[in-house]
Length: 161
Image (tube, rainbow, N blue to C red; front, side, top):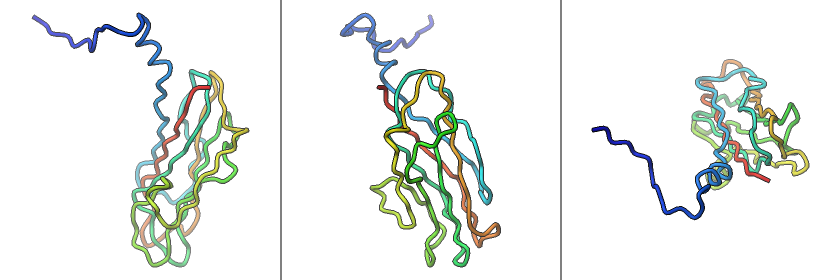
């Protein structure tokens, strides 16, 4: 006898409930650059959109912000819809002189130093079905720092319109 888990079978509010939830629940788009970074990475695909909506938040993080007190390791993140930026101010993560190489994030509640918070342009953050979302990680600073920046990640939160 084979047992199959089909999840909760009801009663449901409407016969089409699962489809309605699937259509409205928007999982975030996630981008990862695994390993050390010491050069710019351009036009990294996050995906093709299958619903109309808008980008409501972008969070960038690095596992190690790098270290070099004379030529500061910095990464600037850009998110684009069909090649056009969504930001008026792009998120930036930078090493702070005197700190150890450590995890840093633009997530506001973390309170990290060396962070420039993103500001999304409300006139440039909407997308339609078929639009392509990409991102770029622009590295600046020493190409041979004491400790290299590593594992740049972004989370792009979306919502339907």
